[in-house]
Length: 383
Length: 140
Image (cartoon, rainbow over all chains, first blue to last red):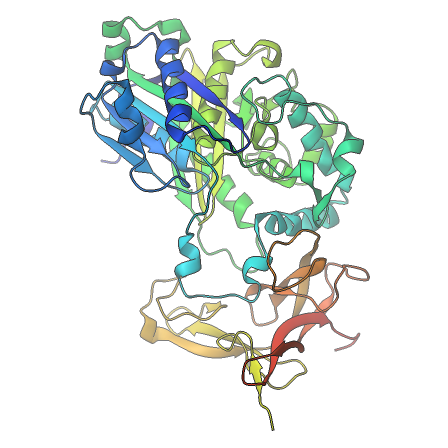
């Protein structure tokens, strides 16, 4: 019989660590990755030799990234593999670590995301199926089209959408791991430069370098390795889906999010009203509006008003992108999904400092990626 | 006399210049109509390539959204230019460069039609054409 995550043995995030997301530098990817893993090990008070499998979410570095990096922690011979799933690479690496521990294959597993910007071969460009626009439509124009559609359908202004960038940069200014750590005004966001349609530069996420590490453990590991149980955060759902055929011009990003997060809610036995914190794929401002609606936090067309009213601020009814999100914390691709898990864990532990959501018991991490894929995880404190 | 060639010969013919059709596909098993054409298998039902027929899609549709691109790295076109998301009357939603460089005068719901625009000459001196979409005149 098929099982969902809650039917398997309980699993917990017990360690998190990051290397700050930043513009491309001379720092080797090895240093980025080791910084994050060592911080996660220290956070969990674990030795590297306790880790029994490792998955590296990476899309840009190239073949065979894991061992040439992780051997410098002491070569223990554990299984290692790279996980590439476009923007959802880190999320998918985390899911693999969860599956190992939940399935009883390991007691402690590592999910790491690490990347540096660089030239990359995109397989969709090799399908020999050209369309009319080719490279004239890059992601920011895909989302500019969705922005115009949303503004027209719901009578929402460009300024209302830009408020997402104001909120998320305010959060990023309080996150020492964020690439953009500067609060911005609505006027600064609107002042441009214009990129595509209504989207200005600050409404598009920075793609830099960085790393994020998450350690997943079983009850046995917590008991035997002396891990602090009250800081462990349980993973109660892990769901990933891919795009189906949606007729006409239906917005597949939102539709795929709706299906994936709904299944995660069903598996966890919760609903959107139970969420205290959300980290979602806000690579462009419009996405935050589309996805909070797709997740059921507010009715279609109502997200802009909810953001203006502060409902998704830290301290609001549900903190969305408390880390700064992709817009301010940044989107280094491989690390992004793992970094979301780190932020949710920090929030649910109550260790997020000035950006702490006051009551944080349940959170969801959500990524979409080219292809099109979607990954959702639900974490809960004390579960 | 020089001949006209299409920049995307697999997607449209270089004639007629006004309102050319697009080369799409249709699955004989499930009826799914798609663009661009492909011979790999049906995305909707998984039918084998031999079930996929080439069909011509009328170059008419409705503007679903649009965006004027201000920043573009490629050398094939100079910014600003405007991209339209158009739902063809024959079913598929497609993205096309529009004939107007900016979105002035465009509105979601506008009726749109295909046109061929000059796109330079190839090495043999033939006139190259590219399919774009333009706002259709009222009543058409």
